[in-house]
Length: 165
Image (cartoon, rainbow, N blue to C red; front, side, top):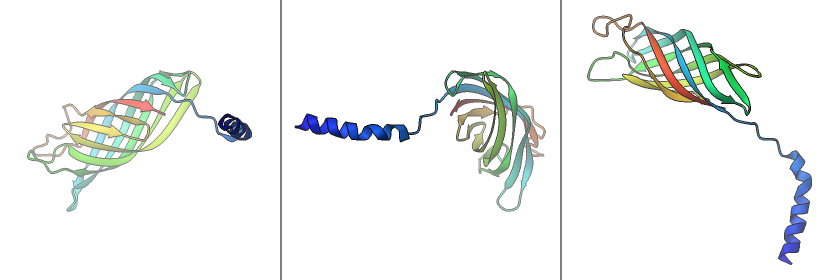
């Protein structure tokens, strides 16, 4: 009797299968992002400043949405705000920030352009995240600014992230 009930219940569900949306294929890649980041020095009592990435580039390796593979480098830009974190060594490149990034990458089936919210934490090295990317970055010297008498206003950064969609 239990088997008959299970069989009838399964048959009743068959017409609903057509209404279930198909799952999108997902992919993952390892990406290197590099470029120039500019910092407008913080002002006001909350030590809040503005950051801008321009120009930058993203280069990914791996699969994107199933059998679609990354094929080359694309542009990467961004802008947002940051807050200086208290530290025992001054305010140089100890920050937490948020903003938006805009990037394009090529695959075997076309070009994709994404705009995403981003956040980061920086204290020597940093953590970078968007809805599609997570990874780390560094801002190695030399900088424009010396962290002692003048704030850093421009530097080169390098990030290693995993992109999953």
